[in-house]
Length: 299
Image 1 (cartoon, rainbow, N blue to C red):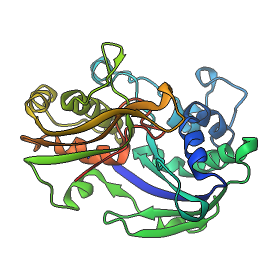
Image 2 (cartoon, rainbow, N blue to C red):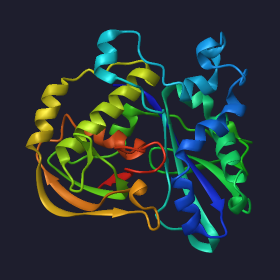
Image 3 (cartoon, rainbow, N blue to C red):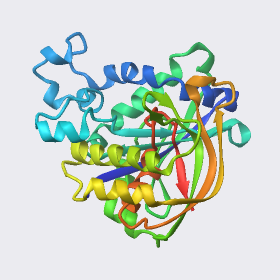
Image 4 (cartoon, one colour):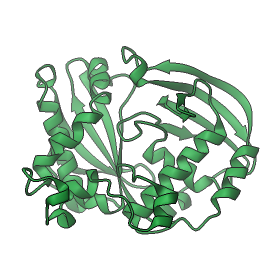
């Protein structure tokens, strides 16, 4: 399963970092609208009647057009958005915060539109107009940063580092029998239409299988060459050794930004699941993954 990612860090000055993070995390529904002027050539037309949608950056990212292949549609269903923001739970020092933006596959070509839309999002709210993007950086496999620009413009696009899914797996030594999963933001998982209040590794892994394989198919042009039934059985066999998970929400966020928080240790055979877990640390998991929820790390 080979597709590319970019890992971008955006440093922002904010008057009230904690309130600003909460405000940002709740703005996912507005993001498509603020990006449209930057990426759509004919914004007055609907996508269905527009002859230019095949070359439209906005349609590529936000159109979420279903696969014409019935078998692919059955497996992947509606494509996820090809990006994932991550916001800190609390603000940084000196009134600054650092946001992460990961973009997948063909949507990498739309980075300018996403950054312009993000800048418009910051300037479009009366309370947030004092916020300012200070810098944009690109991260390599080891986390080394290269400056892409000061402010919201990419003045040094030649520094953009494109990561491959294979390169991410090869960049570090992984433990195939033991993992610690630490949730950095609330994880929102649904089962039979209800939001989970306890961590289930099997459901967590299946959500990643769907999300990563769908991103690879729709935006990377490749099928995951693996047996999903066998991977599902592997996920069922993973044992929880230490459970430090709780139900929580972002401070002041209410149920809309609630989910499972905390960390836990797991043992079992992770060999087949590892590519999905590793890529999930970049692309988040569960509902509202594109705008900050379900951000996690592997120890």
